Length: 399
Image 1 (cartoon, rainbow, N blue to C red):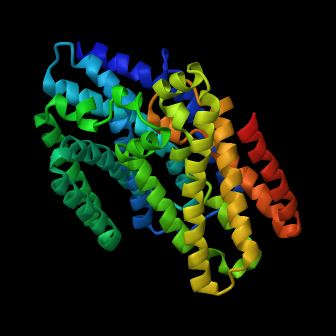
Image 2: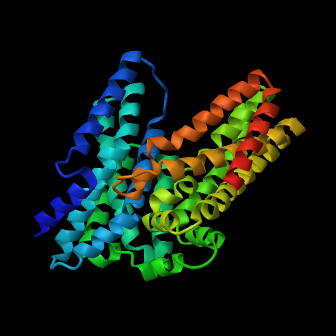
């Protein structure tokens, strides 16, 4: 029974014939040889590599565990008779394989190609990945006791960052992995199931109320979206310190980079119920698109304001032209994001982690980078782009 359930869940993640796995690995192999042949090397401290791989794996594993689609699959599986220990380990192993080979593998092949490695270091990095998978699963199973998990994770991060160069670190991570596995053997399968009442967010709630209340309620019960936006605030704070030597006009590149806030731009793609309601109920096109566009604009302009304030503190050179540019980039990226969601929503994704990292996320930032390059070359072009933007807004309101 466990083997059948494991195969069913694996087919959900990798496709009916596991076709997603070889395709993804082939792409990663091409990336590896492309970078390796280019002979471009970076000096990255070993403990930083440990930290990068561990944090990415842990983040992707947490997303996979908390995905709405994963919760639905868990609900179906828990209806069947199961052995608690075998089911938990099987479930975690399959999600771990998905996380490592579909998500972490890309970072790993890049690091393998651009860094100089010793054979023992490759083994150590594998231990780091395995440790991240099982530690994340254990902390997720203990999320009701969040203070324990938070302290545990903080301690591991502190050790890696401050004692990462010591040889005993890998031994400690291996022991911690074994301890995590022992805890998972005692965990109940229901610890990995997040009910609708636990999430506090039901289909009935989504059918009522104004769209703005829906947005804020959605963010309230999806903390990872809020965290991602908070990370963008931090990026806006530190970005001027990286761009200051490139001149004042590079601030437009900063606006383009800060438009990369994936979660708020995939609202229809990640919520099939909302999309169905929006597309089938009368007069929903304008009722949805306009407040959604304003919401994304609000998020973007807050990030851009933080960026400009940080730029002023660091360089004392914020101008009215930059403020006008901030409004343009925030509003233009919001309109493009809404148009993409309305006309080209992302389909056929397996779990929400795939949705967050879909290549479509780069379309809007790339377009904004093109606009930034044009404005840096011909500053007067910004006013022409503003006129075109006003025309877009009029189309938005009157069509």
